[in-house]
Image (cartoon, rainbow, N blue to C red; front, side, top):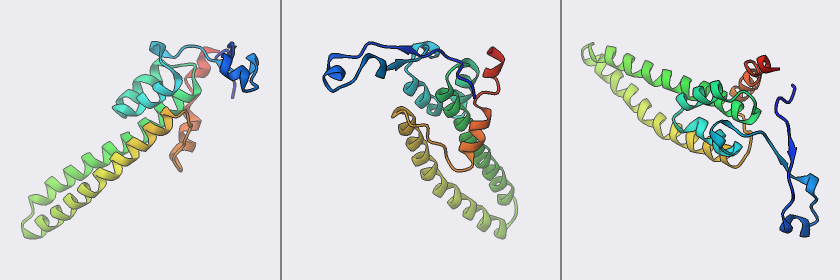
Length: 157
């Protein structure tokens, strides 16, 4: 995988120099879309997922970190969104069936209610990980996201 953005050295602060750092220890990347920091853009990919993930994936062609979180956001929360819609449609169909259908519709409702807090915790977890600068990939989905990080960006080379 090639690096499409140029890494520019930054001057170390006095605190970093006092701690034994050098000017070559810090590196600055090309600005992200909108002038955001890399970690902020990565966290924003999850904010209104999967929609912000899609927008950042299209707009950010150079930053691997942001594109990774954008793709992971689209896959995870796009899939969860589709699952919730499918459950609602299934529940609507079940309600049309007499007594037995209502019982199954209640079971589907309970599954939806249990799924909501799990989705919320996952959403918060991924936002915090991205904001801290961690390139955390969920099992299976992280590997798929890695494959799509540079697909569109390689056209810029």
